[in-house]
Amino acid sequence: MPDDTFRYLADGLTDEVLAQDDRAVLRTLRGPTLVRFPGGDHAPPRAVSTLLHGDEPTGFQAMLHLLRERPRLPSTLYLFVGNVRAALAPPGYAHRYLDDQEDLNRIWAPSAVTTPLRDAAAQALQHLRDAGCRDPGRPAQHLRRHPLPRDRHPGPAGDVEPRHAVHHPDRALGAPERRARRGAPRCL
Ligand SMILES: [Zn+2]
View 1 (spheres, rainbow, N blue to C red):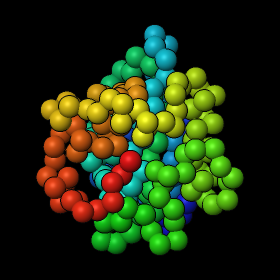
View 2 (view 1 turned 60 degrees about the horizontal axis):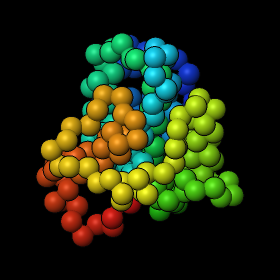
View 3 (view 1 turned 45 degrees about the vertical axis):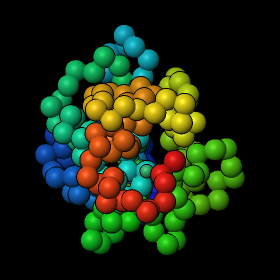
């Protein structure tokens, strides 16, 4: 059963896991997970966050698509997969977050660690800070200052801007999903 317990996987995902479809990968992860994919040391580590909202699978699916190619990474990549439980809740990819959860995109500021998701956010941030990632946890402010052009494709191993593009690929790609969500709460 999925839960909201944070997990950290330091050695990437196995070929067996990556060979599964996206929902099966989520069932394997079970909860909010930070996965480290070791890479070269020619550049600072990069972090990509996906599925902060359970109804936004595109970035996660795009990252799986890239990772299955086993690219040689110029720097270590951290992939955060956020609200796994909401994503897996029937009928799948239908819930931004569940009734007993908080909005995972609202709990990244320093605050008391009072819930499993807050604990997951705090632990993920600590891992990224320890790894030397720059400017973790400031997506909203950054995106407001630098909105992405719609025709821009998310990068394979995003720094700050591609990270947001992966979490919100609709902003970058103009996906129909964006129109479908009209009237839903704004993400950021
Ligand atoms: Zn969102």
